[in-house]
Length: 418
Image 1 (cartoon, rainbow, N blue to C red):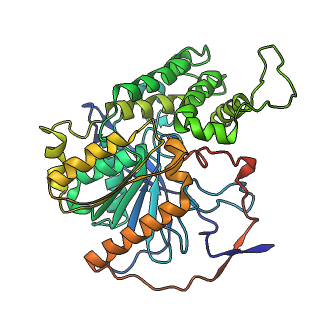
Image 2: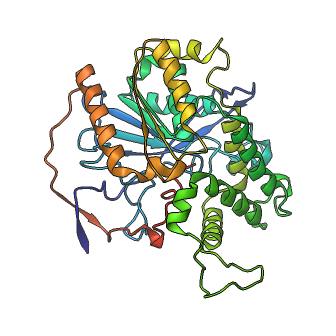
């Protein structure tokens, strides 16, 4: 039967697909091209008559288009940013038309290495061309054209999503009114590249990887992919968050086993997250997306970062970093803010106190909601965007309230974090 929930859910949603470049391949930064291209996406809320209230949500490394709501009444968990997208939330779907698409190179409906190559009838595997953050944004631009959205009210994303936000601003500055890069960077540092490479090496070392050709029912390189994910999960947390959540607590035993089985709760957590990841992600996509991250440098093709951002001075920015984020530490955001300030951009910056590490942009919901809501209100007023005023009451949807699938740990929600 239908369950009545507070006006905080978009309810049941449906993944949609847009295919383009059937006749004319899309050029890629590598010099290669790709055709055809399918983008999986979801939308929440209604587009106003002027098509001026659209917000584009960019996901992080392991995320996808399912940012909010439920695909069915049996879904154990909602979309990865459900706490911030919906009626009365930071991205209020009673006021805004919210779009989220899966990046190309991914494995959740958009064209990637696990997709069928129309030229061979087999999955691309490593024959899929290398893609960049710029290529991902270029594909999203085609989706925005299809949705008849010429100017985007705001583009927002954390981690890899923040990089896409910045790329959008530089590549299509006249189509962006506001940009919100959260826990992001203008370029991958050597340390970030190093972590990416260790994860890739874990996949290469799995005998089931088979040079990327493991489709058609063959064993998948899940051991290598799980290890790559375990490494990544460590970087998303912080020393303090691990102390608070796990400490040195033992898992399922009262004393040390003095063996090589699982002793500590943090070990159990990492193994669980690694295994969980293999059930929804493709190892080849992990290789491609991490490579796109490593290639990212906003100042490429420009004299400097300031030169790249000079074309975006009319865009309103909200830049957020977190004190305990050691993967994308505060200095990355400060470098970005300094360049934006130098070119005269309207930039709001805050370095939020948090113990959650890199995942804080997903977990500091109350603080992020206040920040984002206030900022979007200023953007709307600045651009005189007509928005409906809707009282927030009750909505009826099918299914029971999701409880986080039994994982209330300080980790990414539904794979939304990098």
